[in-house]
Image 1 (cartoon, rainbow, N blue to C red):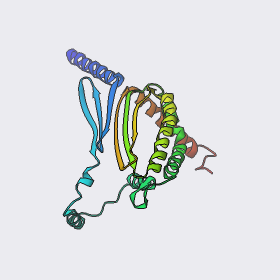
Image 2 (cartoon, helix red, strand yellow; image 1 turned 180 degrees about the horizontal axis):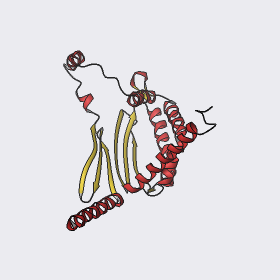
Image 3 (cartoon, rainbow, N blue to C red; image 1 turned 90 degrees about the vertical axis):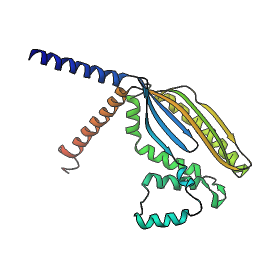
Amino acid sequence: MQYLWWSLLAVLVVVVLAVGVTLWHNWTIFLHVFDKKLLIELRGFGFRKKLYSRDFSKKKAEAGPGASLKKAKSKKQKPIQKKNGFSERWEKDKKRIYDKEKGGYQHGGLTEVLGEYREIYREAKDVIHTFLDDTRHRIEISSLWIRLDFGTGNPAHTGMLYGTIWNLVGLGYPFLVRYFKAAYPSLEVTPDFYRPRFDLEIKSIIKVRPAHIINAVCKQVGWSAITYVKQYFTKGSVKHG
């Protein structure tokens, strides 16, 4: 019986040590965007694990002779699936910035879209800033390389968009270094004034310890629960009038 207890204790110690090492190990997240594909990979302890992989060009590749007939048959067999709110909004916002049917790049569209997303950010600012304050400089962006070749088909619109891109970089980098350990990203932005095109490639390496993320999330959940209790279950609260 004594040996059984010692064995259980040894197993418990090994489990605790393994969990501790896993949580405090500096994991690496590899992000790669290329040819309308997205790959997110987790690396650590000598192995690699794909967290997310998607090819956004498959839907366009399916278009061709007989595609409309296949689409009609699929509609009969399967019920129509509605797009979720985020993807539907993303498609609308892209058209507000660049719409071929309306002549390409829409002047002022990018500014309007960014303004709307800025309002959304303001509504969730407290939660986001609290989380970022708890993880301040504990997440390291050791490498960030971005290559963008673009053209709208209109030289004037391409020039305006080129200036807007560099303005966004100038605004975004101070925010980045405020909360993350990050070197200045390597950027290659090439405008094409003669034809419409969009070719984006991003490579990024992010290092993070899961313990820091778990700690920040637990604090957020704890404070949210306390705030909820104060609002709805204490005297003079919303629930009690």
